[in-house]
Length: 263
Image 1 (cartoon, rainbow, N blue to C red):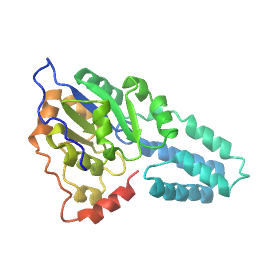
Image 2: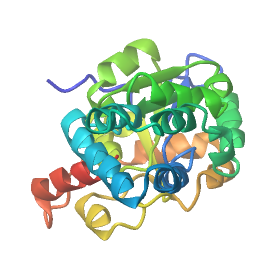
Image 3: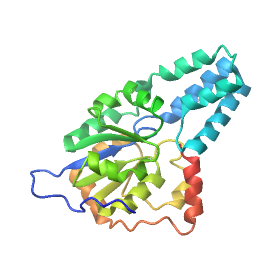
């Protein structure tokens, strides 16, 4: 059963529309590709290239099993096969204490602040229940959004809960994954504006770009959102009637493949 769509028109009974901005984290506000690259270098230095590759193989298997990236879970499984590796403490400490604040994209916090001026800013992320909250907290995003954070396994399946916790006249969803933007647009139609910052290693993946229709707004970088005003963002989303379908050229098989590729 599809979630009930939010209202497609901004309420005129109040002095300003109640707009909720749903902001993704990885490769949207924070450069997760650089985090992963730093981890690769640290692993190779601490345990060698062969073990570094083994860790990522475990990571990919676990991601396919769980549906989200679980860095600490992969380390736990790696430990089973390397129980006497004295470098495991160094790796876990590196992950938990990583300086995520240094990996925010330029103007990311400015964008959050602007969204707070326009309406309510909410972090909406997929991930585990330990590392992902730690990332959000240490990056400064937790306080920036006034602790309005939701983390799910598959956030596109949690639209009713999102509506319950943060009711709105209109939503603006900012995410680097076209698959998620498309799914939410299909469910909410003109009640949501989908914004696609083309950042991270999926941004120019031709298979993904061909498999899904364009979002309401495409940005070269997250900071470009500062060039918009809230009325323009809302009107762009309302102009599109929500009849968004995965492109027939690729079909559902391509959608499934892109979902497996994404973190």
